[in-house]
Amino acid sequence: MPTFQELGLRPELMRAIADLGFEQPTPVQEKAIPKLLSSQQDLIAYAQTGTGKTAAFSLPSIHQIDEDSKQIQLLVLNPTRELCLQTSNEIRKFIKYMPKLDIISVYGGDPKYKQAKQLRKGAQIIIGTPGRVHDFIRSKTLKLQNLTTLVLDEADEMLTMGFKDDLDAILEATPSEKQTLLFSATMPKDIRSIVKKYMNQPVEVNAGTENISAENIAHTYSVMKARDKYAALKRFADYHPGIYGIVFCRTRRDTKEIADKLIQDDYSADALHGDLSQSQREHVMKRFRAKQIQLLVATDVAARGLDINNLTHVIHYHLPDQNEAYIHRSGRTGRAGNSGVSIALLNTREKNKVRQLEKMIGKKMVQKSVPSGEEVCEQQLLHFVDRIEDVKIEEVEIAPYLDGINSQLAHLDKEELVKRILSIEFNRFLEYYQDAPDLNYTTKNSKRENGEKRSSRGKMDRYYINIGSRDGLNPGMLIKMLNRKMSGHTFRIGEIEILRNFSFFEIDQGLKEDLLFAFRGAKHKGRELKIELSSEKRKYNAKSNRSENSAFPKKRKRKKKKKKRFFK
Image 1 (tube, rainbow, N blue to C red):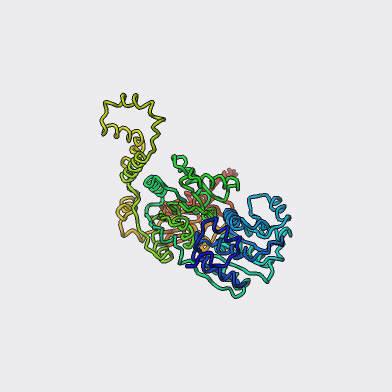
Image 2: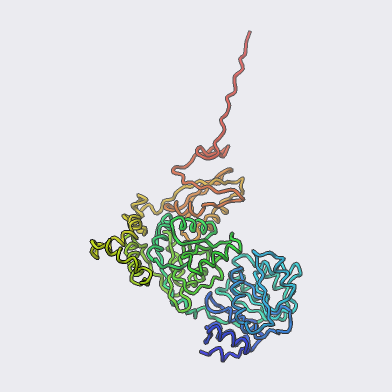
């Protein structure tokens, strides 16, 4: 493997690289940098998070920048403001000995007028999110006529986040004579269309299979009922007292809810999601990097661009909607030669996804049991003993008190003293886990809980939902809604009845907990959805479309009083 000295970068860059302690390039750097230094050809690089791709595209791009010109020559597009800041910080380290170069970051969450003021002063390098960059192009604050290099970093994620129109507009506004570099972990159809339309015979570099950190990650999963996921999360956190990791949830609402629960239960945790302001986000990340927070509960979008090398665990509280995102998540741990653990908490209907994930990561996922209460207590006690053994004793500070302490505890032998010390630390903890239930899902547990025989697997449950034809609902729309909300589950849909004000549908038995959880807080055209299990088929009046048990009871008909008639 070549060293950085052999790549041919300018002396100022080599000096900065030496200060950073870099000696040998990573696989993606080794493949990309020589090609970009020797040619102006467009390039596509398949590279995952943590492979050193920022240096792969920035070093050769900076090498070719004209320092004497204040025109924008390098534009790097990132999906999130966190990644923008991270990329900017890394590039600043590389241009440490190039004082004429300026770099500006533009992203949502900060006032536009401040960023616009910086742009008017001029800079050679711009790092930005597609939305904010497009805004400045439309306002003619950002002019790209002299652009020589455009970098699309985390291109697949930018499309997932809905930046397709912004990317098209930005690419249309850039000169045709430029070098376009596209870095992505996956190559979905939309990216292929961008490549075909805007790139000129790009050379491809594949470093995805050479991500060394992936070999250091142990991929595990545990299966439980959906309602037991939070309890299982706490078990794993307690079983690993030194845990320092990220818990991934599907939505910002779930993220906030899980983080709030953990904080209430005295865990060192906080949330990272899209509703946070930039200052709030930076405060959370500062505390997390300082290890004042052990568990960061985050969405996929909010966690993009986090660069922390010593995470011990990544926990998938919910599996991502796209399997590729599992690789991005897991790649947050096992970096810089460290080992890491990826734990997927699966409900009973998600286990079928394991094989898909195994094919993608190229290794076996090991099923692990959710730790029992006894196992958790044992680990906590051993951890406490390790802390006692490793504690640094300050003789000068405690010496004045030792005689009095020894005198007061003289009647206790060593064994009794150890018991009392452990009891002080663990009485409440041991009491909490006394008779703790088994959270692992088994066929035996399932039969016992549901009171059903194996032959009942073919049966279906009937549900009520509070929207109907007046809300624009039709069978096809309801099926799409169920498939979207229950992503990752395998199930059959039976009879569907769409009425005016509400509807009924049938779905495989045993999904009540998962279904109600999936639709929690869901809305249709601004109206909150309510789903209930119907124990018996509700009868309805076809004429009025009102259920006898529904939330829309039929009005009582007033009886007409008969007029008395008098006959002669």
